[in-house]
Image 1 (cartoon, one colour):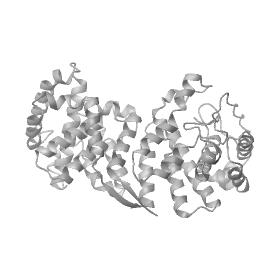
Image 2 (cartoon, helix red, strand yellow):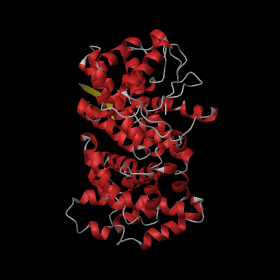
Image 3 (spheres, rainbow, N blue to C red):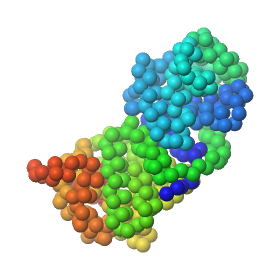
Image 4 (cartoon, rainbow, N blue to C red):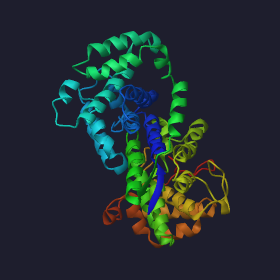
Length: 433
């Protein structure tokens, strides 16, 4: 299967996910990207080179493993273990061919100029990486300055960058940066409301790319691995849901192209949970009304993240509708009955099955038989599709193995039965955490 996606829109969506995951708090990556873009223009780089700088800026922290590491990296000149997230970012981008050329820039984006110039790397890579490092530290220095107003902090920040030229940063990069930052407009343009306008305009620069299924899957895995920075539990849930959704699509006789898309939808269905605080996702007890309301936003947040990418329309809808129910009491669109396609119903069943089979902070996992009993109870309540649940029943062991990613015999080898899941007070299924 080949599919055409807008690569620029995809990169902006990845940048949003970094923000939501708490990796690039406060639009850090976006400000780095905009500053890099302006510097590239002053340096006389061509449109393609300047665009690559911009995209590298948006994604430069994609290898961050957790918000706590992110916090340490906000030291004005970097943290001693910065190389770890640079290597992870390089590996992540290197696995997706359309963005692989950005991987070396991300790999070296914390490299001092006096070290980079001695390394056996192409000059354009070293220059671009050092420029990302420069504007990255500009943003960090500005945030760390006692004068939080950038107009008040700018002189001290510019002086610090000049003092670091020739050691940390190339003088050939520092000079143009000082030229373009010597006015109020440069700093004011980095405030969120002005930044959003610039980002919107950049998104209109269409950059469509035809990719194969394996590339699409790698793209989805990039999103999922960024999710892992917030919650490894969510990542494992997405992987299991994707495997099971593809299997059920195959059992339903859907075309191979649809099976491919179903797998990707399963990988991406819980992206919106990035906007749910961890203390709610991991709360050991029952949620109150306010907490439940925050949880019920997540499927619409998934829709918002993905709907900005042309080419993923089907995948976006299937992923976003995984909490819709046949009786019309699900969320976020309140679809019902015939409005729910087979693909949506499969994702919904796969999501519930995997969630019940997975240990959560607020409950233990259920056995395969107990999961199937609960699925059938949900069918009786007109929440899940009976035909899809029947497919689970006919291949329960296979479904369990795919959903849990575990050794089949080991998982079915007896042991004490876990406690059943409590019934939800509201229309939502009691497994949406």
